[in-house]
Image 1: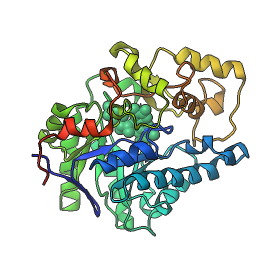
Image 2: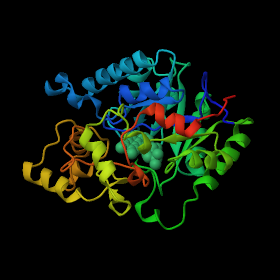
Image 3: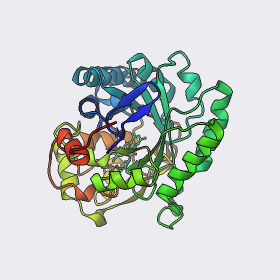
Length: 356
Ligand SMILES: Cc1cc2nc3c(=O)[nH]c(=O)nc-3n(C[C@H](O)[C@H](O)[C@H](O)COP(=O)(O)O)c2cc1C
């Protein structure tokens, strides 16, 4: 029997948090549908403003905040009673604005990755009802976060432990350490949980992320000490996922061998479908250097002109240009074999189970 998941003031019947997927892979439609099915739906805030007319008028950051509120409205319309969060990346220039826009837009929780969200309690101090959830890959990282948050008298409402060996998107660890056997997904889950219990004096939910695909994986994660799972790639091949059909087809077509690590212009490794990376670099080399929005705090492309513009390449892929667009995915994405619905995934993961 599955227990539900409680994060801060919010409780869902199933122990599933949908992983935020930028740019606009998990928008309001996917997040709203996950929330409607009894999980926690998460809108990814990174780069949302690129499609807005206000962006073309020149203000990327203003557009980002407006677009995030719009995606939250869409999600809320689909799941008025559901639990809906926003994923914010610490590495983006408008991280603070995104966090504030998420609070103003009615997010129930904020999940932060791609860097240590040390200032998060300060940013949400006027919104005590908003739960805050850092993503880490080590006990050391949660220790650093909690010691800083202690000064603001805040603790994480839950923690996501992301496995660099399997998760998609940006990975907050060193490229050269991944694949060496250094990371032990459930050893870290248990380590983080034990450290939090000692520090806080009570249990804080710890959620495992990376490579979780089917019911067996969920049961395994729970049996290994996780209180819930964060799943992202599994939701791409759904009708409700906000990406273009060609993006979903790239998941259906890819093989296990085509999935691997890139060194992102953000300065972090990332997991993606690798076969079109040369075309992404060629695309930017041919069009000449353009960095119109300075979206990242640190960007190798902006600083050196090498690599490619990551926000535009992710956006192109989301819109269906899978030849020159970057397609992030977890190590299990090759297991996608049809386009289904979010409801079908929940039925498969949690069928015939009474929830507590
Ligand atoms: C297409 C894609 C985009 C992602 N974008 C983000 C993001 O914007 N922010 C973030 O914190 N994590 C991001 N991630 C990581 C996921 O939220 C999640 O933690 C991870 O992929 C879990 O592994 P799984 O895909 O095997 O389920 C992304 C993952 C994918 C597949």
